[in-house]
Length: 170
Image (cartoon, rainbow, N blue to C red; front, top):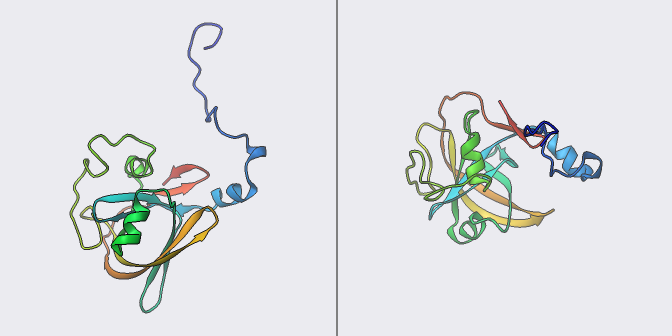
């Protein structure tokens, strides 16, 4: 509170590590804009992933960095299939919910329209890929997950949701 009793609202996170004490690698990574995706698998688990690459080839492939402590990882390892959905500019709350940054009363899939696919739950009207899990290996503090694209639904939509320097942007 200020001297006059008013509550101060900070322009930045007062609990964040000061910039000069942050890892230079994290600072570099944060300056590389990344499209935000949602990775899902059956039974209904999911995770927001912004470290995703689609690799053209025959067959097409997808790679991404996944936290080995996420609920998604053991399901990927056992299940063999997953869906990767591109999130749109208006999907910040959805991204935060699947990242564990926002409450999800009733579960991650309780809000919105979801349909089950052979690869995982997806929302109709979105661009997504159904992938076969090909393996993973440790890379830094994550797992580099690799998959072969088995199915693609392309939908014309607005701008993608982008993550840069710890924030979403359009």
